[in-house]
View 1 (cartoon, rainbow, N blue to C red):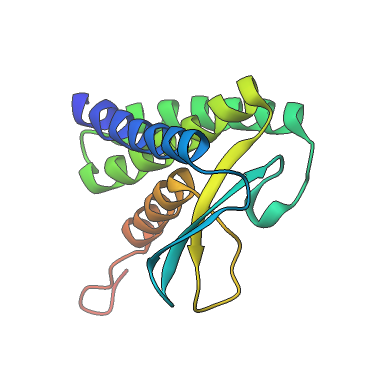
View 2 (view 1 turned 45 degrees about the horizontal axis):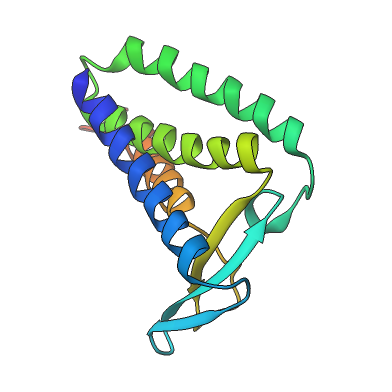
Length: 151
């Protein structure tokens, strides 16, 4: 059970530190190439959700994320003994969601900074990376394995 909280705390702290670094040392719209042509840092602020949808819906996101965080804790407590990998996925989702929740609740916006330079894709942050990775793990673990023609 402690591993869940350690993974969630790790995701949360990595997210918060990267956002603090960007907010402190970069100006808004400043771009810094990391791997030219592949990925770079671009400092922006997002008052919405993924892909910039639902701008300025702070209360909606705070309430929704609160419900999601409570739901993750409840579900985790039911499955953590039998499904370790699922628990790690839930921990990554929890830590990432908590990072963006804190920003929206206290600042009204999140700091986004990671930009793929080889495709047209919205700028995102480490919370988004952890949430995406956690959801991917949850989906993979949840797919029934077929054994000898049976699921």
